Amino acid sequence: MTPKDMLLGLAIIFVWGFNFVVIRWGLDELTPMMLGGLRFVGIAAIGSFFFSFPKTPLKWVILYALTLNFGQFALLFLAMEFGMPAGLASLVLQSQAIFTLLFATLFLKECVRPYQLLSIGVAAIGLAIIGLNNANTTMTALGFAITLAAAASWGLGNIVTKTISKKGYDSNVNLVVWASWIPPIPFFLGAYFIDGADVMWSNLIHINWKAIATLFYLSVAASIIGYGLWNYLMSRYSAGTVAPLTLGVPVVGLTSAALILNEEISSFQWLGIALVLTGLVMNTLGGRWLARRDNQKASKEQ
Image (cartoon, rainbow, N blue to C red; front, top):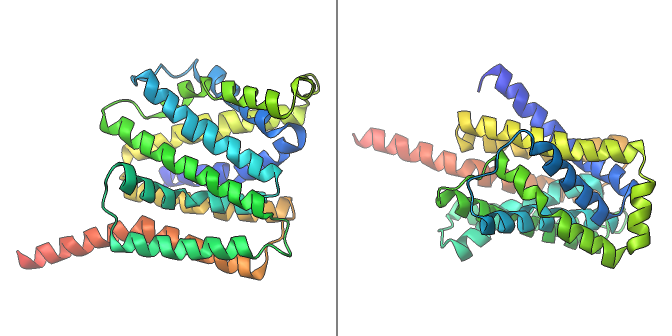
């Protein structure tokens, strides 16, 4: 990877990691459902001027929107509203890798390799330690559980994305942008039935510059620019080269939340964090190690 592209990769890590602190700020100004709905209105309204409609059938656009966009973020915003710290949310959400493997086995009939099972086991132990050691922290059991549900929705969305790609349809930033027209519908319906019309109207008429800046960051920086740069790197380098960059997201998320939001994490939770990151590294790099070993073995046999 060239120095310029490495800097772009680092920029993505920072933008996506700091995203969780920004979400926390947004939830101080707007309800979870209104924050989600307005975020995707922003992505769709701005992005549609720059990206064409994807060559993807509408049913797949809807499935993508309901899993990756609505399901993931509705649950994540609710989790943070119900006591999930921003820093830990950035880490626990990465358990989507575990759910993606499980769903790929269940729906796509893909085989799970031994190193993947081991990585799932290590990460699962880490998640259990994080979830069970919340007595002296601000994390709630409900917030933790809903964050896991958000990760599961992300994992299911990954299966939808993979299926779209296998069928030869667009699964790029064009899909990210145009699929964003769909989530505001369930988000605003959720806001109406959960918060009520008066709260919805109050969120709109009393919106301030902090909320607007938050929405701009979530829509433009984290979504349009973030995914645009990510797709650029994926188009130039192998997935094995680019994918490990996401391991830096929870590092930035945990660090920025501790420094800016003064979030506290117990000693046992730090152990759980280390195990989760170890499991994610094993899952990300294990395939590359096996491929390198097989290539070396084949070279020796020749």
